[in-house]
Figure (tube, rainbow, N blue to C red):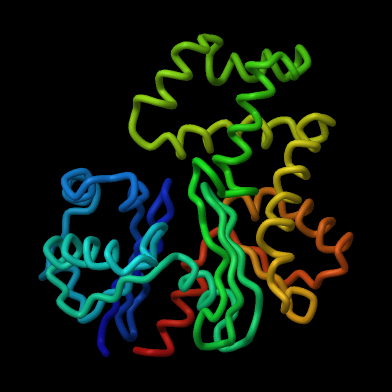
Length: 283
């Protein structure tokens, strides 16, 4: 195999990398892709505008696309059709984002792999395949510990008057004080999960405030209870984390693992570096 196009897509951002043997990796970035929240036309338009593809300049023999919502066979076929048409790469693999995280973090070792980005997920990886994955209920009914889950809590604390004056002012300076407009954006504009996750900025900017620390710990603790602790192997194998939320609040994850007497492994913001290493071995 002479060249490989790799894509790692969350609901907010997609990282792309073109690998060629003996050449420096070429990296790109676009908006995220989620087949449950975007139509074929929306995805095709985004790719055309943000990642126009020149087959002569960026020739690739095979493509591996990993994404949120891409574990479902029906959605895999839906995405494969779009990707093959746009990139012209007939040998295209489409798989869920959990496969990307597992290959990037564990390689050929066993582990409990967790994703905490806009959404959340976890699985038991046996070094070759995902053998046990917790069901995902998405941003409406699940995604415990993910950015949109934290965003809901932040919005509730603001709207219900739970925040003190410092955090109330901080929220309004960044997101405004028009609740009707916020609700309209949430319920009537595209990508509500991204919008909710954007509120996490308030937590990042106010670390140390007791309400902020409580929200972070409570939301991540919900993820431990609903997902991690459901895996029988979680006490026998290291826990690996990928995603923007996991990386930003890795100190809280470390503390929670200590409380539950679990071993924490590597925590990364994006699987792409690990995927590059993994796929270089296949070139």
